[in-house]
Image (cartoon, rainbow, N blue to C red; front, top):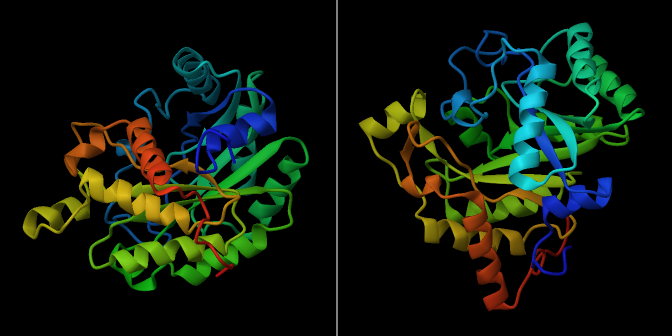
Length: 309
């Protein structure tokens, strides 16, 4: 854990691993999603609009090399980044043939500035041949798989049309473990019908999974989604800024201490965001407020963590 922060920060996790300031560069590999193309369902998850969370510079018509060039330049200028990971972010990046997946991954690795891969995907899109490919690549470079858990509750997963239950998540993590692949996860708190006790219990559940890092987002309602229509028809509660930073502080106290926290909030383009409007605030503002709360309490990540789930 970084000595100047009461939580384990992903920035330092990467810097310690690569020996320099390291950032992810988003890539659109041209894949789709099984919850959109009919493999599992159509219409996608009720909350999801890919355009709301991928950088505007991404265009799947551009080559991966070109996308990386733009991303590297941006991250160098904005953050002083020195080393880079190709982050296959848009849609489901293990949802294709093994041959095409390898072709796209290797195209990214062929870029001289790329030191490894981070691959965003779903728990139900990791068949054994794909995991074997990732295991093989992991012998050559850093490979992380970032799984969208979203909720640990089956009722919520059904409600948001996720297309699988939580047991699929547990099975995916089990099959990834011991293969030389680094594992991250993504969680959304605030889905309608869930309660504060459930959000805090989620920290214990994910702490029992073999993850190295975690992204936690507050629920954002964005245009072009089923959830936006649901919200317009029957508005449901969303977090205020202060409610969120208090919840995140409580959540972090319950989270396994060695898990690096990659995000504490989501962000969506202003022209796409319905609610909450404070979601336009930059991620560093949330992190700073959580840091202040934990320091005022005299507490830290894992302060009340006791055991694995």
